[in-house]
Image 1 (cartoon, helix red, strand yellow):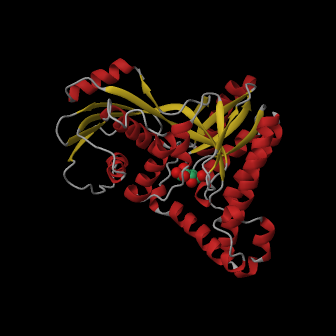
Image 2 (cartoon, rainbow, N blue to C red):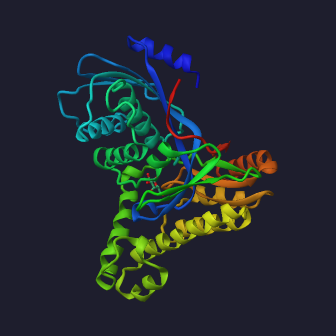
Image 3 (spheres, helix red, strand yellow):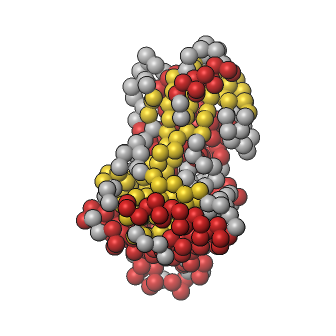
Length: 388
Ligand code: GLA
């Protein structure tokens, strides 16, 4: 993105000189549907960003222009916000949470330019939330007490609440957290209960290759929230036997199996995915640190199978993309990434083979499905920032 062209675009719609901020999308290497079960995840930020140009106003109006939707919406901060079930909910949700947190909120002109593919499981929604939150908190409060004090973890939590309460998607913390805390050339191992994290260097001999099936997911349509409800049902039943547990994070496979008679089959399988996936993430972190990419890749394959068979969030196109990837030279591991029902796979591929991998998988996928995929070779990127 050319910063100058973003500024010019801003000035086509609004007066004043904007400040520029950006926040990245993400891939998740392993640890899917574990975040809202107090578990472990291992995402990395990617080099696709949502950009926000913002200039404060002296009145109480907020104007927001989305380039992707060629649409402008306005609100008076004296009024309350109502969800409109469109792109602007992500922005208003964040403004709403900033206000609820008791942080000062004044009028602003905002231009949003998104380059994270939408509906592709790369978390364009977290990128828009975090970029907006950072911009509003840093630019609007320049010179005030709050200017220096945008705590990244607080920002991630605020953006998650915006999505939970305003958009109505009961997502976990992973996407907003990595968009805030990502680090170039590192994956991030996060404990979603304590929010303690470790940055793990990505081995230079491997590349992350992201393959977009071009099948768009629709989380808000309810499948995601249903998965979450099934996990809660599992915890409710298991608590009768194991009163000290708070989340599936606290349960091991042996315990789940011991009480399997009391758990409906579907709920049992959802729980089994979460419990085994938490184990896999912890093993994967050790493997990455030991440089054992082969073992890491095997865990990615097991994760995909578990998401497909136990959690039932894969789809035919994701399964095909993973199968085709596994046939390529240089592949360490392949799996779906993100919430599922479409979107992208993440592949760990030997660096020297990545370019061939990209071409071969794209051609084979198109032949198998008739869909032309997007395939990106990506390195891990830094988290959200103000752009000088
Ligand atoms: C979506 C949610 C995340 C996480 C993943 C699945 O991306 O936003 O919180 O639950 O799905 O791992």
